[in-house]
Image 1 (cartoon, helix red, strand yellow):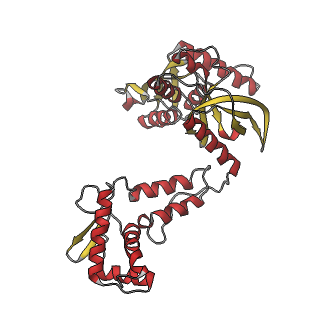
Image 2 (image 1 turned 180 degrees about the vertical axis):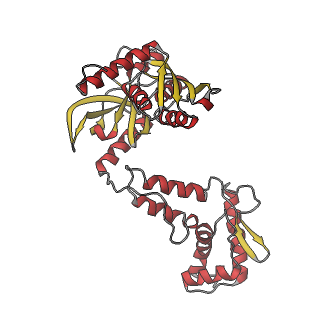
Image 3 (image 1 turned 180 degrees about the horizontal axis):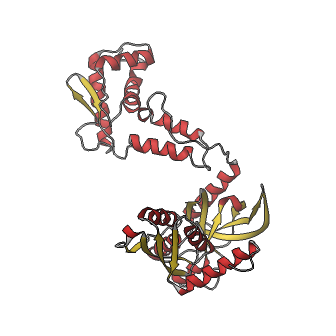
Length: 361
């Protein structure tokens, strides 16, 4: 069969077989007879054993030439009379593949049908009857939203300013819309939604120094965008890539629940719980809201339910929402040290009291 058309395809069938039917992360292996039977099933032709040996050598040579062999002399190796394959460079592991499927199935923006495509790409990572243990979402995202996301991504990559229609969601409608010209800097995923972090071109006028440019850095939530088109205005960006990364990192870290501010404040809180567990429950709830690392100022009193924490973060309304949530946890009292934060928090509480029609706190 050496000169048949099928024999020319045989090596490709074998490569596909080792990629999709053998796993580099377990003890799966096959014999030459297994390979011959697989090829016969696919082509209807029985091939000689010696041709199998020759093709395995060619496949190993190919994988080695393209630099994908990782930590082994050959991709396909033998153990006695059985063949197994080794890990490729940058290969998705079983844990990583399943983590991807779990993430997709629980991310509202992504159609869960993508999970089937991932499973089909990496069949050895998913045994027969595999099911994610996480409950999948059923939300369907409109194709235009995906189109907007790709346009924003291309604007960032191609350094192209974009004109967007931006407004507020009221039910399924977008109201109070306005047109803005932005220069996309980065995409961010927070609060189960995409945001584009961008320079507002209008706000950037007159700002020449890189550090000043951060004043024009804004967040735009994808589901509040009604249209995206290419703008004729120039793309505005930081002159220094180092400063761009520093300012962007600071902007994201000093955000609270996706609300960002150029004004950063030190927040010092003493959490007083009846028990150590009370203090830890409160701390965990607050830490889940804050992007920046929280410093433990004093944990020596933790056994008594007292924990002192410190963080520098954005002075935004959601910071006070997080502090309020912290104070509502059962068996917990809090004390704020920073006078500015305490004053702003008092204003927040007064607004809440007014909404509840309370004459006094």
